[in-house]
Amino acid sequence: MTDTRWRDRLLGNRALSPETLMMGYGYNPFLSERSLKPPVFHTSTFVFRSAEDGKTFFELAYGLRQKHPNEEPGLIYSRINNPDLEMLEDRLAIWDQAEASLVFASGMAAISTTLWAYARPGSVIVHSGPVYGGTEFLLTKILPQFGITSIGFLTEGGNKAMDDAVEAARGKGSIAVLYLETPANPTNGMVDLEHARQIASRLRGADSKQPVIVVDNTLLGPIYQRPLAHGADLVVTSLTKYVGGHSDLIAGGCSGATALLEPIRGMRTILGTMCDPHTGWLLMRSLETLKLRMAAAADGARKVAVFLSTHPNVAAVWYLGFLPEDHPDRLVFERQCESPGSTFSFEVKGGEAEAFAVLNRLKVIKLAVSLGGTETLASHPAAMTHSDIPQAERLRLGITPALIRISVGIEDPDDLIADLTQALA
Ligand SMILES: Cc1ncc(COP(=O)(O)O)c(C=O)c1O
Image (cartoon, rainbow, N blue to C red; front, side, top):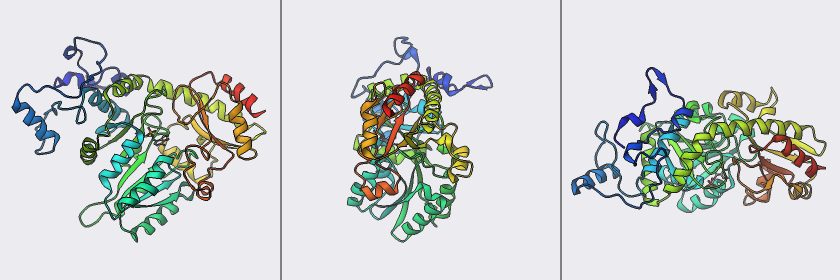
């Protein structure tokens, strides 16, 4: 992949849009039998032309020397690099408006490999809450076994809660990471990334080290929110969701500056948490339609949210498009996000029994965890994705027994409304 024509982002003076670049960026058909689409490079290893080539490629891959200008890392072994993953990473970086990206075997692989790269025994991670259940488990149950502790703050407490958590963390150790999930799963609570940037800058030590701001952008990314433009250092995404978009794969991504990704790349090589070539190929296909799918789903979600908000058996709808003018999240939402997206939660009147009754009656909408697929899914966070969190903590985070999360797909929204009408009756 040394021919730079396949990496042109300009047509004359015109900067090509991501939508256009997704159709072929980084791929040279003339290196692959003129195949229009990239093949799946189902191979564990790559043949070196000479022993000298092998030496050169390893020097670069293992960081034994700096890259020469325009030098391309040579292909070695699919745990280190693979053409499908490299093309995918180039394209994901375009959507994320990042210098580079790395892709992983899952969203959790992206999150955990990133945290392993930046946290050390004695480090503290300050994180927003709620976070995805798996992330919560990693932060509160696994990392402490390695001397890495965390302090959470509730998104609804706003910047004051973030400040207080940082103050508390300073007393416990050195703050390695500000880990922020915004909008939060499942409550859609928002975190002010510009405020987080100010905090990180304030914490810069004499050695110029400061906490790395990592944002989980799964709920709106990469189309409707670009955290790197608002102060994040690294953005992690479960590509399983909107980016994959067809509920047929598991993968994750991490994007940011090349230098910040280097320790994560090294950790990924050793832990072996990279994405596999076939999944990478599927994701490239998905990136071609990402914007169309997210736009259609967002339109449908608005209609469904409006319907739910007027239903007598619905107590509350946590849809970002309904944030009142005077709600503190409203300003942050308007500054950081380009759409409310299509995943949100609502509370039925009653408790778990009433929520389960609605879920069990759904016919078109599938009762399943996950989000961001072409089909609409509904689930019960308190009993499913967030059931690991102790009950009192769950309630504090707003994950009540009456809460149902819905991820609206691209079906006819009127069919979804008909389904919800019969389920809520
Ligand atoms: C916000 C968020 N982050 C991370 C993850 C983990 O992603 P994966 O299931 O791809 O490991 C999920 C999964 O539901 C999620 O919702």
